Length: 158
Image (cartoon, rainbow, N blue to C red; front, side, top):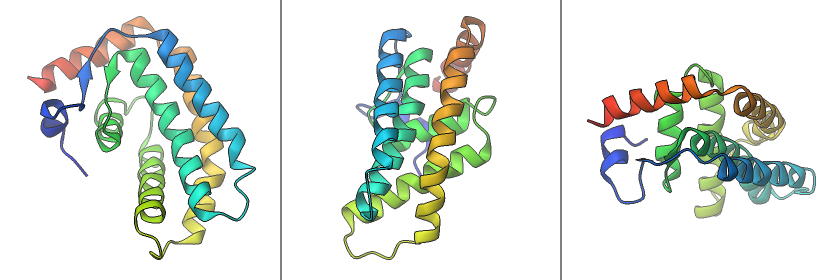
């Protein structure tokens, strides 16, 4: 996994921007659309892994947009979640999206790689819960909490 310093300094990495509720809602909509596709992924392990991952990633990114964090590097977005959102997402949530990211990468970029079907099925079942949790986080995330997260980011960014 990447480190925060690199994520803050690399092009397209973590960047503080104005919070954008419209973009946040758009990403939440994309997550919901992806979630609906999980049922239609059938026996395709590649599509199942990708759809599950993007359901969770778009969910997470909706929260980042609401806070005012832009990032085009997925591993940096996940690192941000782990470091700055422990009051919103627990260790199991972080592990879930990390596992999903790893499964998607393995199946998409390394054809023929061995993938644990049990882990893939677990990710598939838990993607729904991750989305539901994120919708709740999104609905309850207030200005005070957003400002506190942004302050912490500014401090760590240096």
